[in-house]
Length: 419
Image 1 (tube, one colour):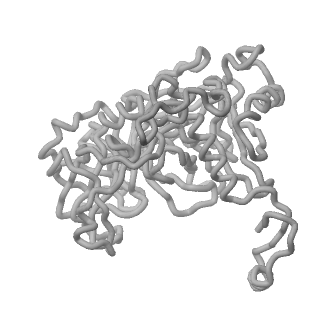
Image 2 (cartoon, rainbow, N blue to C red):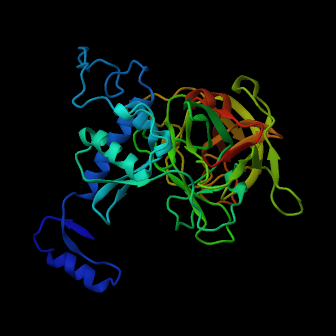
């Protein structure tokens, strides 16, 4: 534990440390954890703004007017973040070991930043120097620049099935309990000359945090039989919006060799099936789903199915301790700058006698045969047991997700090759 300031730790803190061998108390930190987190949140908002400069939402992605109706200032307090620099930032992290923010960049993705122009042939050290000069006006806390290019599994064996739908997404590389489930693999056209497309995986927008400016990377284990074989999937975009509960994460090209990102997802339990995966052959629109029998895959509850009973529902607050009124109350959605907004009537509802959903299943694929229907958002249940049936399951329709995130579900595999 690293405390701000040079004053000695309190007696209470020292007593706690004395009885816990794994707690070491130090003083002299420059920033509190909250200050670093706030700086990271603000910088992520700038990254979002730089990615979408033409949204007509003002300098901080607001509506462009104040609550009183007056125009907001058109000039931000700091220069606009360069779009090429924003593209190169792969992920952020709060590093309490160094009491700073960690900014991971991919030098190959820097474009039109300063007099050097494209930096695709620069070394990481040269790129870091350039990036450091551009970051200084935007960060008021200490930061370190690290190499965020490519995936770096610790094993030489790289299992490409890690990127199929239905896998566990973990908050850290050492986690054993998944936060959410991966949805379908997706792609979107690249916005730089040296990057023809991005490839990634879907999950629910509330995973990590429902807010648009609280981005969280996830880890996926490329081969569960090899401990420490986890790779990090940087966050791209997404949150709990009024139209879809969705986010997506990059699958970076490897540092050497190549591997194939499949258009598959886990659609069967492994028992008795030579291949528990199905290939995505297409998508279904929400307006055509009424009455369809669909299934979903959750990392904790497995595979279960039910019938679509509504295509225009709203998100509800569930859980075993919620009152009936709370369970039928619309939960808040969010706008692009984090302001609460009314959730649209866009949730697809599924019911079934053997339907199961539990914590950790969010984001998992909803499907019928090889057709992608959506990704799981939530459920209504009197129990969080993964073996108990639930009253209702909700999911965001895949066409709404594609529109919200500007991605398309993969219907053919994509090969990523090191540059």
